[in-house]
Length: 351
Ligand code: F6P
Image (cartoon, rainbow, N blue to C red; front, side, top):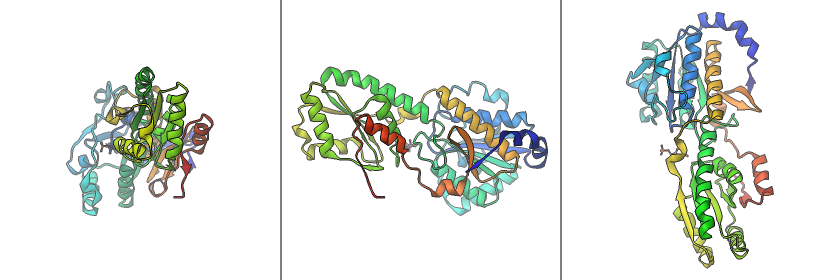
């Protein structure tokens, strides 16, 4: 990972702006995440400030293919900082999976005289950015996904808001769990990643987290629930990452493993897309703004085919091919913390 020294920017920007980019594009792609709007806003405001025109493509990569774009101005960006979702809209563009689709996109970008592109999205979107880069388009990616499964960054835009939403929802569910001595199984997002499940288990005070990266231990889970119930602590929360299985399926597995001997009721709540919505938190607005600014500054410097990541509190540039080819692991300090707090999270598996 390269670290970008900030003074380098101030020294070379006037030159770089003249030399490299007169017009840039920005798009949001894949699943929306809270903070995408502040990121687009930061990209646009920074570009405008540097005398660069900036166009937003609607509906992700599809907007390039459909010539669906608009020039972003201070007026069009007004009110976007605190709005969830993405006003540019988003999609998973099927045509973009093909070489032909990507070639068309390159042609269209050239037609619109776009000198560089900022792509905000998750793993699939960043793969699209990498492919565009290989075809000669200067691209900078920003990690925009609540799953926090992108290699090369400790967090993504939207992770903090989604985590807060999950915790808020679990706090409410716990009221009922306590009142009825029930066990609640709560399914959270994370297609291939248990990050949200693990960290919200810590901050919401769950008893169990079931994540795709670790092998759950059903006998231990059932023993934990039974012993809590026996000791008049009947309320138990299990957080299940969707990447493991669906909530109904997991309850079935519990019953098959002897869980029907549990004296308490087990109910499920699938949080679903509520996790992707809502006003971005302060932390997400800040990281989105910082990443958006750096994306433009680096593009203007001639940087390309990189993603802006956050590492040890500092923004870094990570090669997109590395981002797209490496797997992000669950943070070991959070696994250790969960274990020390008594959360049942299963055992390491050989991958
Ligand atoms: O944004 C990532 C994610 O939230 C995954 O956790 C989930 O599997 C997926 O999006 C669902 O997205 P959609 O319903 O838009 O297909």
